[in-house]
Length: 226
Image (tube, rainbow, N blue to C red; front, side):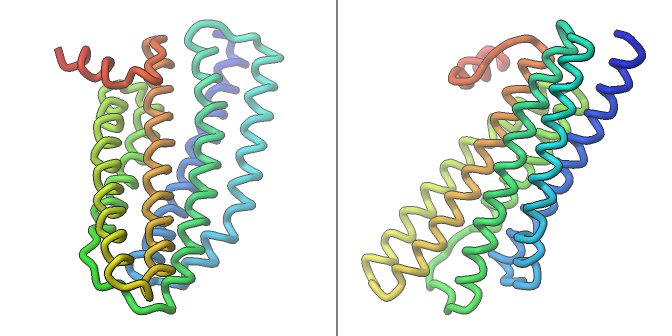
């Protein structure tokens, strides 16, 4: 690897980490607004969306510049490809955090639903998945990536439990429908963030091993456990 390419890749790594930190921050704040009704964070999340979008565009432009100037191959090329895909996934996570914050704004002025919802557990799992997926990239660690893949099923189960509980609430009391729908949407947004973290973990496996595992994640996990 030339010194110029090495320098540009190190700078790119710093930029994607910076974007990741920004996205983790708005997800954390959106979750606080939703679960703890800390409404002071709602505008913070919404107002940071433009900064995240600008960073995403800048990173994409940097990736394209590196591809054009250096024509990287093998591991360096895989890293650039993964950053391009991860960049898009992180920006979409930021959009989903905004959606959660907007749902939190509506729910903050309403009476809480009389239902046992373990939003804190679900949100905690999702936040962990995002952080570990970023760590797996920086450390080129497929074991970390596998942990993210395993957690996705748990988040799916929690989302399904949320849906079933809220469906019963709406059936029992139609007056709760609008609040329940906003709550369901928040759960779905969290589940989608988990899916995007899973995408990043799958891309890390590709970057490290050159192995495309998307759409065959279960087979990969089974083989890894042998």
